[in-house]
Image 1 (cartoon, rainbow, N blue to C red):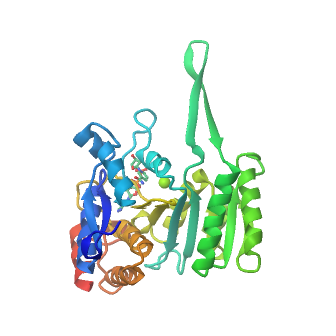
Image 2 (image 1 turned 120 degrees about the horizontal axis):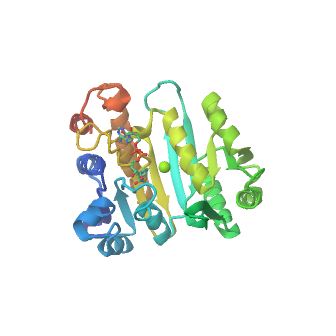
Image 3 (image 1 turned 180 degrees about the vertical axis):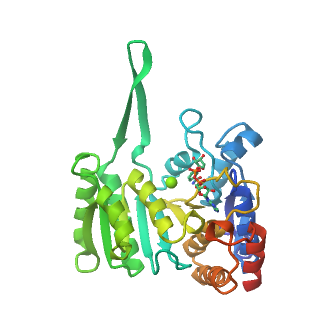
Length: 341
Ligand code: NAI
Ligand code: MG
């Protein structure tokens, strides 16, 4: 939605834990960059419960429905019981079926020249969380049952998205990741649909497939063989953290949740309760997510400027947060970056 003066209305959800710290840093940097975004400030997660008694307040949903565009900090999800993941609910609510997670080396470390784009199916698979317990004897929760759901249409849709992305972005090869030897139905249908779609791109995009466990090992041994990974929901969740590790960790890993009618941009990492409130979080993941957001709204030149400023601050100025072996606080890194801009 365009606001006056070519401003673009977007929903801003600072989130939980380190969320407000990295969000504030990102907004400051976007301002310095002269970004077109006009923010509608909303809450979700624990912050939503505090502000509105609901982890996903109606006002937040309405805002995203209106703007179709959001930048979101991480949201804390209770482990085991408690409320259902708000991230999962947002992806379902707005049919954000594609999760785009690029990992590209900025700081050479254990690995150099990594450039992998992971596409994760974002609303099906085991994350539909059709779960229940079956009682046995005195134990009401003796057996846990979970059902995954993958639809042929859903598998075709994410495969089409991946191949279109490859063509548009000059990528050469897609590796379909599955476990069709064991989960023959649930991930077999994914492999089958992806191979079917691949035929439309024959001669333009190379295709291969890997069983997820072997793929995880290959990513450690020889990640350079991979160009794009096309994954089911669960495998994509796991392998996207792994490829983040190849480029220096969760502080450098952005993600985009994309659907036909809305898009939500976020860091791959969570709310990092262990360092929350200390002012030491690395804001680069969310800033790189903002770059994806700028590209999404047709401002790739701003994204390129921000990426190169990030790389200059990290490499030439050597200003780095603790997770990258530096001593800079979130604020110090942000100041260095704004100076670069
Ligand atoms: P996490 O990603 O929050 O933290 C894992 C480790 O990485 C921690 O040691 C943390 O300090 C470090 N880390 C993460 N981001 C960092 C950053 N920007 N700078 C420096 N260090 C960073 O994962 P964890 O601990 O498993 O989850 C914590 C909470 O976050 C949970 O409630 C989980 O459900 C939620 N979560 C939310 C996500 C989202 O909103 N998209 C994604 C993943 C987890
Ligand atoms: Mg994850």
